[in-house]
Length: 591
Ligand SMILES: C[S@@+](CC[C@H](N)C(=O)[O-])C[C@H]1O[C@@H](n2cnc3c(N)ncnc32)[C@H](O)[C@@H]1O
Image 1 (cartoon, rainbow, N blue to C red):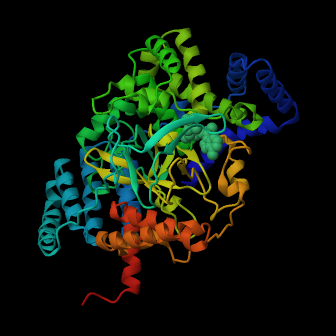
Image 2 (image 1 turned 180 degrees about the vertical axis):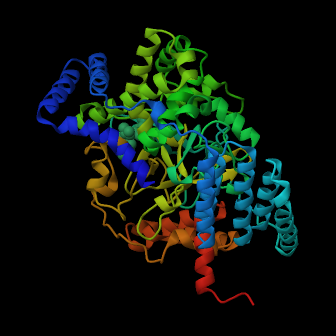
Image 3 (image 1 turned 120 degrees about the vertical axis):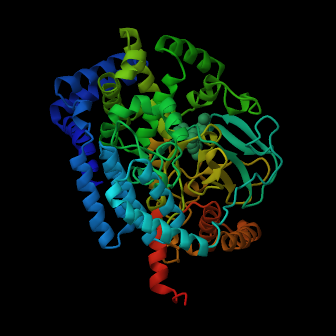
């Protein structure tokens, strides 16, 4: 993805050059200061930035990022996949084959790519997955003259499946405490409070022991990490690379079922499809989920005028997740209400660089929607007033959206790096009410439920009655320094006066966990092993929590998340394959 990073930088780099050049810097500073002084009239500021971007031709046309499907390109990716496969780089091979299917125009090329994918699953001894890919290759019209090869693979696969134990069941977490009557996905003892220091926040009315599952929530919106787009379903984010088939129109989107494809079309993809190339090249993951939240906001309403009126009412009423009875089916507008009413600190708008980045991002997104997505333009931008509304909505909601997302998958490796295991980001109405601390007492682990990926919230520490819940938005004190907490204005907008106990008490930094590499060990644990370890670690945290912070307790908190993650089947193909190779190298042969 180095190429993508470069492209993202090209646009931002151009802006940054102007921001730092003496003459334009003075111009920018002047405009931003004016905005800060004059009771925050954002109109002139937005117009200034949009005019500037236009005049200096900073943002390329969205169409220039579009990548046409082409059988020739598809063949290139398939051959690249073959090379990876030859050198046993299996996950990379699957990625290339899926990419090949995405770029292919003809059904035959799609079927060839998918048939090659089945060969990789065979090699990885994932026979059930291999059979799924064979079935799909046939559906796409695998050529008759090559049929024999596929038939042979299928027959061998069926033999192997017979020999394999049935697929292990994953643990479907349940809330460990009595649940809120009206919000069955949240424990009853959790309640919403609000004050000047913390804004809205969640407090427990009763003591909760460490290792307790306190909420299991369906995210309102999710997005895949860049590196996952040819390995996971764009809609449900599940790790089902053997089931993926391409979007009919764009080259960056795959689905695992017709149901997911339809849901994605309804929720975001009809708008995003013509600009997927630009989205990946211009926006990082946290901005992409913010963009998707904007799209979902519009799609909640038939037109911009209706939306503008509804948003005013929604903001006046200030409803949140606790304002609804979730036992009933909520309307799209009701589901959207707590999301629209998410908040971030106002200090964001007092910071020169945050406002500058916000304005750059607004310019990019406005252009993507206005020039790149005909469906959006036709439905939501028919008049000047509608265009104005979009700009204001972007300006006010982008900082909020960015501050209210969380990573999906938080198991760190031994260097405190969670990117290895990251599937993407999510935004959920209840979890977005939990404030940040570098010494968190809760964490969110993705789990699988009947309705797709869920955010499972678990306590890491015993929380006394009356105390607030905190999660870590980025790093904890044991991986990173204090300055990384208070300095993260763009993401959290936390002022130095905000109460983060780890920062106030200057909790120590331990840096590295002792295990060789957590992420890659996941596969060596069975669900049963993980469950046993989970109980032991939970017990350790409950008995020793009062001694916090110690290195053992910090490790135990990471372990708790790790074991729950294994129990929930949160093991990506990349990690599974790395663990398989590690096991081949280090463990005695089976026979
Ligand atoms: C995910 S929301 C948390 C809920 C938020 N307090 C509210 O009122 O909706 C993130 C925002 O909460 C605020 N926040 C988060 N952690 C905080 C803390 N430790 N102290 C004070 N404010 C915090 C910041 O404004 C941040 O942008």
